[in-house]
Length: 397
Ligand code: AMP
Image (tube, rainbow, N blue to C red):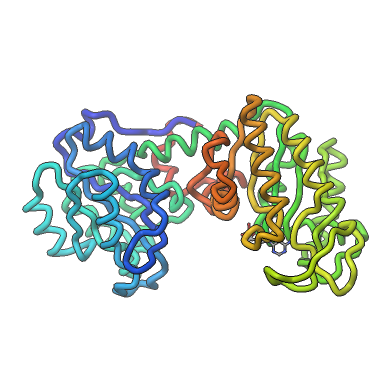
């Protein structure tokens, strides 16, 4: 998949509005994790080096279409200034007179950061009138917010119809790594799925089943599959309405010759609590008064071996409740196996969200080929969906 990106000539001397994802955690008016800001720096540096005047817009949190200073981007401006040494001027609105006058006073080498686009209800409605107001002071639009690209909003989609528009370096890298894994995987190709819910991952299983050699299923979602096979899962998570789907997928995998590997053992706890007593048990005979909160050591070993033998690995969803140390061992083992497989030459991709948080927790984020910045966006990409924030830039597919 090739994307339309900017050359220095497209942006030199132009007023460029960039959609970034600065939806970062803030504590005591300070950015507590700057990963998302750092991810945009290659694009922003390329624009600055090309002689563009750069203005940034983003969402932060869910202010539900109202001005709410709890969700102001001002602290992010200070953090960006600290990280880059650039002069960053924060504008307390994203449309209207304040933006207009900031643009007319715009100094060279000054980055403008506009206020949260989600302070306006029109943003999430992909309203073209609002997109027009966002666009009106600028010459060029650059879309760099991969993690917001699965949403058709005014600042991610409608605006692209109004200005000469390009995708940024972050989107280009994301699409190139994710499509290498999704569309041209070297075999053996292993998909690892985990997390709480089967329903979130149904479309991925359906879309990937005829492409992969092996699917490893862990996390809470594994128990619906184990139950569908007649196992006893105690108080573990189960989506009863997805039992049929789970049986169908197990059947289909068999027909296609795809190995679908489920946990053989589990760490079962009395309660969903960090300090709950726990015990390792066979995953298909969990006592009635216990719940499986992690894959067991035998499963971690089996999964790790499959990962080490793979040439391409795609991982979405933790193997257990990794936020609680007692139930993090399975997820840690998978993160380490991903790192080892990468060292051995495999292409390893972690789809954002909780799995990205997990690889960071276990210090493996620099030891895998790619950690996506977009949880929802990477999942929809693997599902084979067209991402509305990226569609305008696709040159060939
Ligand atoms: P998801 O957003 O569906 O990827 O789910 C991620 C969440 O699943 C994490 O917060 C984990 O704590 C949770 N999770 C993983 N395994 C289990 C499990 N066995 N039981 C309950 N929750 C789980």
